[in-house]
Image (cartoon, rainbow, N blue to C red; front, top):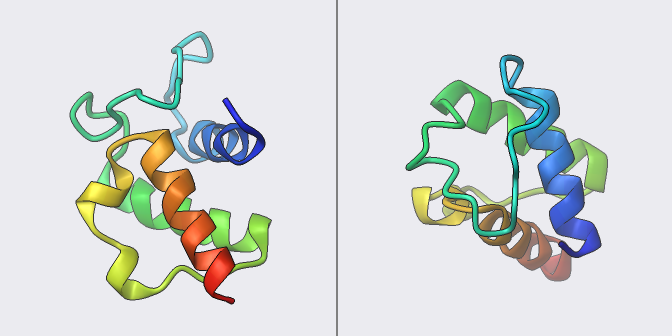
Length: 84
């Protein structure tokens, strides 16, 4: 994982309270398909990433496709940061 993907994974672990700490999270882990994130946790994840990375994610980026994997979330965050 690259640095941004690692930050996303750490934020997911912080947000998802009941996650098994040994649960592997890779850039291609299917977060929604595997039921790892609820809709409320997605919102908390977005807020946490915006705060941690000092960026703002535009509303049009908040689609299920952008939250399928850690890779997808990191790409979305990078687009938001690059657009600043």
